[in-house]
Amino acid sequence: MIRVGLTGGIASGKSAVGDEMARLGALVIDSDQLARDVVAPGTPGLQQVVDRFGPEVLGADGFLDRPRLGAIVFGDDGARADLNAIIHPLVLAARNQIESQVLDPYAIVVSMIPLLVEIGAAKSFDVVVVVDVGPDAQLARLMARNGLSEAEARARMSAQVSREQRLALADFVVRNDGTLEQLRERVHAVWHELLRLRGGMGDGCGC
Ligand SMILES: CC(C)(COP(=O)(O)OP(=O)(O)OC[C@H]1O[C@@H](n2cnc3c(N)ncnc32)[C@H](O)[C@@H]1O)[C@@H](O)C(=O)NCCC(=O)NCCS
Ligand SMILES: Nc1ncnc2c1ncn2[C@@H]1O[C@H](COP(=O)(O)OP(=O)(O)OP(=O)(O)O)[C@@H](O)[C@H]1O
Image (cartoon, rainbow, N blue to C red; front, side, top):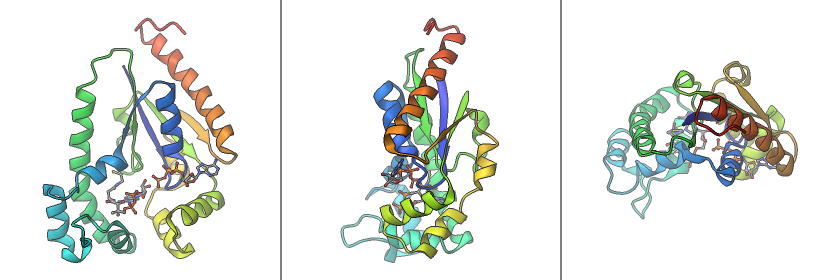
């Protein structure tokens, strides 16, 4: 098995890369999705969030009001650290549980972790893949996707390590400054390298 950590700044294109790797045969574990699952209605995670941030972060439907909580934590380092301290251990446990169920020795398991560098997890992986995009495209894509103002989008970008810090830990970089079709081609090139690595790890792939 090869354990791949896939990271990148907010709105860099991790999901697009993860989707393509899944199409190519990877088992992709999405930490953003796990971070949603652990605060689903009725979970201890959601209760902890409400205990810390108050019932006003709950919508009328009982689900976490994510835009409201985002507006709180991306403007306040202390609040964000408190939220991270609740969510991150729950996500790590969920990820470990999924990984422990992978029995295929040929599997390429891609853990998509937005904050891989921030939490110091690079050494937990055989390979780190960084999706990299320039700040102008990143800002534009983030504002468009989330309907954020420029100030809100910049606050989210500032809550993460710099592009340089992330690139310093990359084994492979997937640039996402072109079209989605170009991105897919670049993912295929990295995938080929992962297959070669898997062959070199003695599990018989040989490709
Ligand atoms: C604040 C929350 C409710 C906002 O929800 P929202 O649906 O708007 O965003 P979503 O969860 O889809 O995250 C989008 C992106 O924001 C960035 N981001 C999310 N949380 C954080 C954080 N604590 N610090 C820095 N960047 C973050 C990541 O790049 C992530 O991919 C949510 O992001 C959250 O619960 N964050 C804390 C948990 C966390 O760290 N998740 C990221 C990986 S485990
Ligand atoms: N090459 C591209 N050209 C145009 N739009 C793109 C490209 N790559 C990604 N996008 C768009 O940019 C946005 C961010 O991409 P994506 O959701 O894959 O990023 P992400 O890194 O997973 O984001 P997050 O960190 O918020 O989870 C999406 O709306 C996506 O459709």
